[in-house]
Image 1: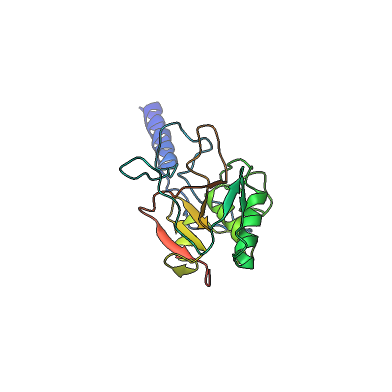
Image 2: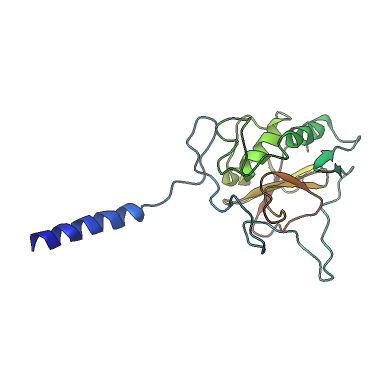
Length: 206
């Protein structure tokens, strides 16, 4: 009987180990161990899923454009061109985002250091905002739910929940989701994604 009891004890210990709760998703920062987004995946599947945050289409099938702003940014290839009428901070956010626009998706990327080999959703949004000194340290997606001020901004709007965050800047969407299959990482998008299930915030003054 002793060997059987020992086997049961080992099996029970392994079950408890694998059933342990995951780390809190609302932690992060330059000096912390990253335990942020768990929904994003390194490769985006061909069929839309919640992790992709796909563009929303009207009943006619035409994609819905991003919110209208006082001046709209334009795309030149993968690079965003800020409108001349944009405030300096908005131009700085766009310039910062452009610097990492071709980097790959890496879970936790941009949280241990600003300049990284790749970025996840909150890392890429944090990097862009930091370019205008609107953010001192990287935040995980859940932390953006209470960051800044409530509601959409005139120039910059953050869409956040505990699993994903993206933003629109001067009419363009900055996001790690919604790309073509096989393309990963932070990219600019000309069309808006679904805001369902997201808390909407904006940096004060923008």
